[in-house]
Amino acid sequence: MKEKLKNDLTRLLDKEYGYLNAGFPRFMRLFGRDSLISSWQLLEINQEIAKATLEILAKLQGKKIDEISEEEPGKILHETHPKLSPYYGSIDSTPLFIIICSFYLEKTNNHKFLKIHRSNIESAVKWLVQKIKTDKSGFLRYQRKQEKGQLFHQGWKDSFVNHLKIEPPVAIVEAQGYSYLAFKKAGQMLENGKYSQLAEQLKKRFEEKFWMAEKNYFALALDGQENQKQTITSNPGHLLFCEILEKEKQEAVVKKLFSPELWTRYGIRTHGLGEPDFDAESYHLGSVWPHDNWIIAQGLKRCGYPAEYQKVKNAILTAHKELGHIPEFYAVFPDGQLKEIPKACSIQAWALGAALQFITE
Image (tube, rainbow, N blue to C red; front, side, top):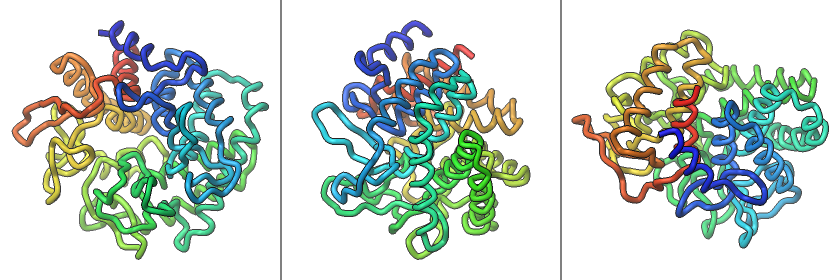
C-alpha cells in the first residue's frame, strides 16, 4: 500500500523543479493551493518537495496588476503550466504560502532559505494586509474581474460557476482562518509584532460576523451584502489548525463535524446531509475529499482531540482499503454505501499525500 502511494506520487513529481503536479490526468501542472498542501503533507517524509514548491511559487509571485490573469503584487498563483501564462485567481494560495514557509522553517531550521525568501514572505503578507485593509468589513474576499476564463469561486471549492450560491465579493470562512495564522507566522518569521496585532483584530471581527448562534457553528461565508451563507459544510473544520478558535468554539466545530450531517465512516462530507442541494456524488456539495479530511485532522491533533483525529485517519484509510486506491474524492450515500466517482482523478497529489502521511506517521 505504502509503496504504491509513493510510486503514484513519483509520477506527479516535476522532474525539473521538484514540486508535485496536482493530479493525473487532468491536473498535470503546478497549482498554488494544491502543491502547497501536498508539500505540507509530506514534510515528515521529504522536506525537499516543500522547498522546491515554495521556491517555484516565489519565483512566479505576482509583480504587477493584470486584470486578465488576476495577478497582483505579492500574490501567489492559482495555477500554471509551461505552455500557459500563470493564472492568479486563488484567494488562499497567498496565506498558505506564508504558512507553509513557516512550517518548512520550523521543520528544517533552514536560515539560508529564510534569508533568500524573506522578501517573498514580506510581499505576500503585504498583499494580505492590503486586501483586508481595503475591504469594508476587514476580511479577505474574492471577486473575479471578468467572466471569461476566470474562476467565480476562488477558495478550495473553486468553480467557474456559482455552485455555492454566494454573491460576491465573497469572504469564504477558511480563508479568514488561513489569514489569521499567516499573520501570526509572518510576525514570527519577520520579527514584526504588527502582524500579530492584525491577527488578533481579525480574530475578533471574524467571530462576531461568522458565528451562527442558532446553529452553533460557523457560516460558510459572508456575501457582498454582509449576509451569512448559513450552509453546513466541512469548511469551518479548517479553522482548527489555524489557532483562531477559543476552546468553546473548537468544541462546537468538532461536535458538528462528527454529527450525522457531516460524518460518515469514510470521512467528513463537504456539505451537510440536510442541505437542499446535497448530492453525495457532487464535486463539492456532499462528496468526501481525503485532503479536506487530512487538514481537519491536523487541527484535531493540534487542538487536543486525539480520539477524533484517529477516527478521521481510520476513515480515510478504510476508504483507501475498500476502493483499492485513494481518489481525489468519492461518494458516501446516506445509507453508508461507499462509491467511486468516475470523474474523480485516480491519482491526486493531496489525496495521496493524505493517505501516505496517515500510514507513515
